[in-house]
Length: 430
Image 1 (cartoon, rainbow, N blue to C red):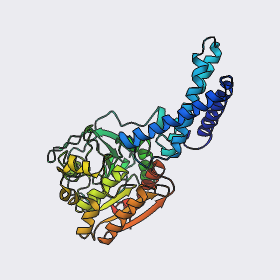
Image 2 (cartoon, helix red, strand yellow; image 1 turned 30 degrees about the vertical axis):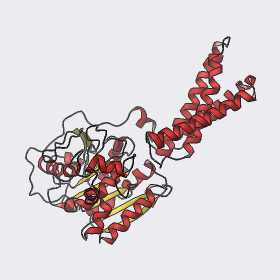
Image 3 (cartoon, rainbow, N blue to C red; image 1 turned 180 degrees about the vertical axis):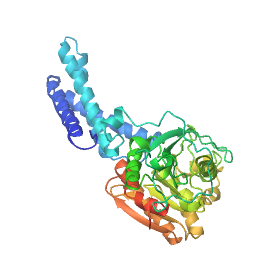
Image 4 (tube, rainbow, N blue to C red; image 1 turned 90 degrees about the horizontal axis):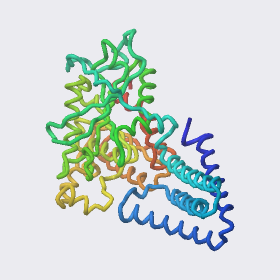
């Protein structure tokens, strides 16, 4: 059952409105002056939340839909109106219980509006029973061979007992060259890989999550397993091996920028350590860079552009979904330079995607840059990346999808371009 459209979210929002109206009616004995004080306090607390969240602690960025602050103010008002119902001496038990329930319903309605805005939990199942990786170890081929031809619909015949669906596994991918510290990655293996004998030399799609976020967001909010299994069902069990690395630097408070910096060598990890491990251990992506693509949303979209610009010989195909025009930190560019580059602007510019596109030619690179139609912050930045990549000779497209900076755009950005990616990767014919 959907949590972002249809009957259930509508019912929750209607219940929230009714609960707030009942609380207002039940508080009528307190008088209009007390009610107006509650309204003023709600506005002040919401304004304080705005200042703390966006000016002081930078809990979220400017892409937060401003309408959510209105819903937050209404929720704070509801809680205030519920307090007299609960705390006033002599109030009957059922009245106290009704006040508690009404306040909870108002807060639940606020949570529902936030979820509708970001589509973080698209269904009840994604909230209460989210998809998770297999508990079994990653099934590695006994002897991966680098001389196998790249798997495609033309040279692959599925065996009769091929599994009907692919699976996701949790796997630690080491960083011997970069020294990068990483939490376990998630790896999707399609039915053709799990078949016996399998199409071992499949292409590889590296997908990077947002910030805040984790690889599991691709499963919970992005529906990646279902998306890939659906694609495989239409193409003889073939789909890319999808690697979803951890880009939190094992929980480091200073996240990597998909650059090599004083914090970590995350670019080397993603461009050298990860591909080497996949080729050696999985026997996938061994036919050359034409079998490799990188994509991501928000922070991950910025990373995808970074890797495409700095390592076109590794990732000649990229999908930048609502990324920035350069890596940022909430405290500003000067702090970014101090934290990651010892204050050296030139060191930053040497790796920044837009600057790299301006300094070199990319005739073999192709990419799609996806922006949300209602995303007033990231959409203009995506166009900047598009203009720079196009001027550098890359074969790029700019797509505008309905929605803002949310999973409505991020999920569709991958789903609607999966055929294009797989054509580039050689599974489908051009």
